[in-house]
Image 1 (cartoon, protein in one colour):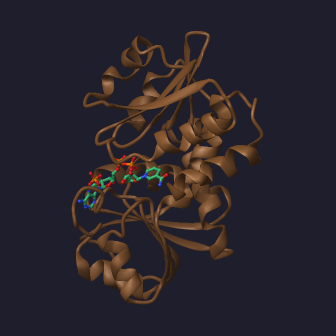
Image 2 (tube, rainbow, N blue to C red):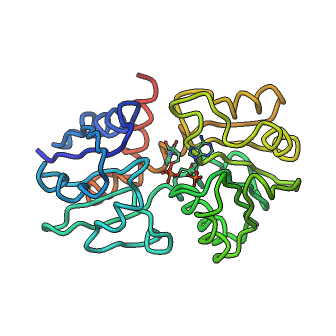
Length: 263
Ligand code: NDP
């Protein structure tokens, strides 16, 4: 029996155990997936191996720490220094990022987007910004503090903090901050959020399982929006494919993972 887990702080809200266990159970794959509340990200690697894990997901706030913990990082994660999926490959820790492609899957319904405003400048923002740039989508990033904006400037995004924000038109505004996850906060002062919402066609939030204050405002303004559930599904399907080393078909993983959203 293989053991998988999700590391995070907080982690009790995570839907990942249900998603992956649904796939393992329905497809008779001998594995089990649990959650680990990890306060200190620097203990990630030690904890991973002491639990005898075959693989793991990493959520807020440890994704950048997860990158540093890896013996090898593969694919898109190398561009951004952010890892959300870990695989134990013969005692070596291999890191991947499935968040960005998961998000691209989620926003397919919105059609072609050319101009995106990302709220927040953490690991998820990096993954999305870098992935959008790959598709020649114009990216602006707004964060409450300056410190984390330098990465985005370097890759060619427009950047601003709350002080320097100015009105522009967007196709999509996406919240990647954790404002609204455990609290009822907006990702930026209300006047900025209202202005951004009045200048966009679509809205998305990376947070799932609740209508955040940000999505509530979008709803009030009749803007088409989605929470992070489809992103969660997208990243989960891709992570599961890595966990089972492609022994299961992607389509079967998706069908069975989707069932976990009905529970
Ligand atoms: P990080 O900790 O890397 O980044 C958090 C960002 O949010 C930072 O830019 C931080 O700003 C900002 N922030 C935090 N609190 C506030 C606040 N109260 N007001 C304004 N800005 C704030 O987090 P991640 O990128 O890993 O995750 C962000 C969110 O995305 C989480 O809620 C996570 O659950 C969700 N997520 C969902 C996924 C899904 O599948 N649906 C996948 C990945 C993430 P500062 O730099 O100033 O500190």
